[in-house]
Amino acid sequence: MAGSVVILFDFDRTLIEDDSDRWVITNMGLNDLFHQFLHALPWNSLMGRMLEELYTQGKTIDDIVECLKGIPLHPHVIAAIKSAHALGCDLKVVSDSNLFYIKTILEHNGVYNCFSEITTNPALVDGGRLRIFPYHDGASSHGCDLCPPNLCKVFSVDTIFSIFSFNEHLQIPLKWYSHD
Image 1 (spheres, rainbow, N blue to C red):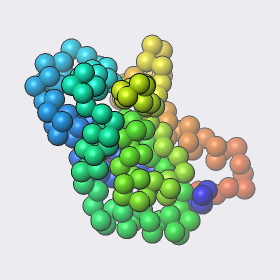
Image 2: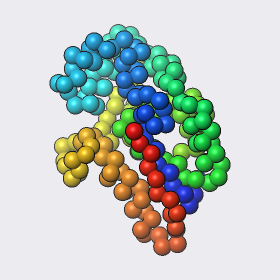
Image 3: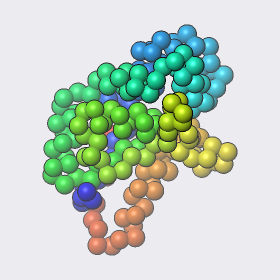
């Protein structure tokens, strides 16, 4: 749904009350391994290593899904999302999480279809193993010193709103980005 009011949300510690990566790490028993690699690997590589470990331990995609279903999403946040969507707002997520986590959590809470766009790191299930990939090519600079190389939220938000400069008939009364 493309409404005249566009609302952008971050995901971790904004829509959900925790960090989805850390939730999986903590609740699936990877804290010690996580801390061993924390300062040695970039975040996406670290999360890839954690998911590889889960796969090695015999954890399934269903195990990860069940873990993600336990992440708190406040009932008032769910109600606000549904209300904004019902009023015709165009809801979008821009997050450094990953599509598998975000889609799983939003579907579990019955609000996935309220969002018209999710800009995040892509993920896929490959032979029973969850793999995460960077949204941006980390090898080339995108000119922003504020974010990790895998996903620049400033660039992503600017890209989303650049469409409006090409359409003189479309008016955006509100530009708001909620983040942690």
